[in-house]
Amino acid sequence: MGTLPVAHRLSLASAFPPRHRRPSPCAHRRRRRHGAAVVAYMEPNPNSPASVAGRLIGALPVVGLVARILSDEGGVGGDIIDFAEFRRRVSKKCTVMDSQAFYDFNERRGKAGDPFYVLLCCWLAAVGGGLLKTEEILEGVARLRLSNDIEFEEETFLDMMKTAKEKRAKLKAPAPQIPMEARAEKALEAVYVCCFGQDMVEDEDVKLLCTMLSAVFPSVGRPAIERTVTSMAKQVAAGERKGPGAKTVSKEAAERQLKDLEFLKQNKLDSSL
Image (cartoon, rainbow, N blue to C red; front, side):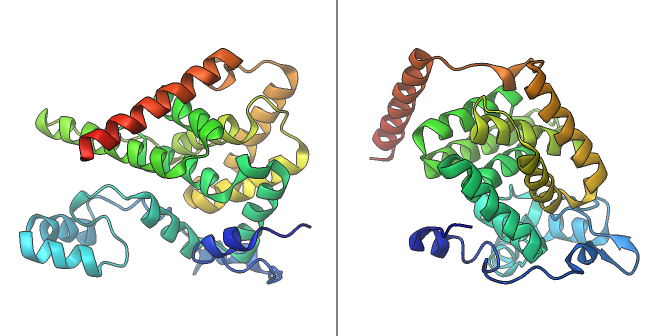
């Protein structure tokens, strides 16, 4: 097992437990407490007292501002959960075994398998579901695979989600309630496009993908995630994958995407001056 660069290990220090810790034999049991399954960190009951109180507090200018600063969970008043907060919530739910899967995946896939890239794909599906189109997500993560500019993609997608939410608010049209299982499937699609390109998904990749997605989407359940990942791996191996995730990107298209990215960056820079 190789060693990650020092800078990269430090950048992940706040996201996952140190990799030298050995997984506990009972780590898989930590997902259940007192017989109840742990639900996803961003999947609250909208009608619960806590959710109602959060919306009311968020609507008060001064109180809402203080609550946003002090809140341990974030998302006060229906705020969009940003990528940093999303990573923090995932890390709080991860076991040592889960975090090791992210490191191992990184070693197998190289730069394209960076834990932050995997988590960005999951964030777009988990938080952006209903606000972002599938094509927008896949195009963005494909662009990330080429540019390695995660900060730009994060800012761009966050702006897109905020804009979509504002438009829906003006139209008084709430975002559709997308089941968490569908969000997990969309996350897998994005991870494949970003981290694999058109490569085969090997057995070891399947195991790691199941562990990572189960950590991010605990309420979906490991069996459902295993079925989804296994099905995708078989489709890839058989050359049967169709749809947006299976599009091949030519050299010309890749170069055009990079030019578009530079144009977008320059426009964003000019607008901030």
